[in-house]
Length: 113
Image (cartoon, rainbow, N blue to C red):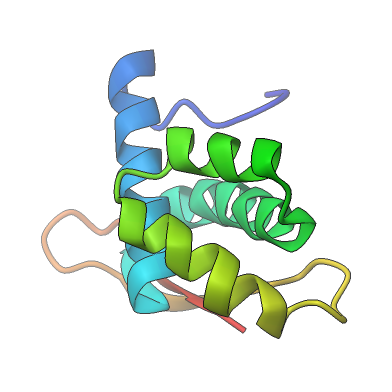
């Protein structure tokens, strides 16, 4: 499969869940979800932090358009992005926890490095 994972959702639902999870990751620093969702959130979080490192007006508008909370976008540009100014990618880490009780889905924790 080229490009991205469909996650068993319609495109509007998939976009909404990735926006919400990316916002939560940047807000809290760590979230727990399934492995495939964590890998997709990792892609978007890396892009948002790269936008934060650019720091110009266009990057701010792109980040605000994607993230669901204004204060998280402000936190991204003021606190999170300067922390990674010397780093060239690899801002997040995914840990596998194991199968979830109930449906057996592989669970993972994604966190900011």
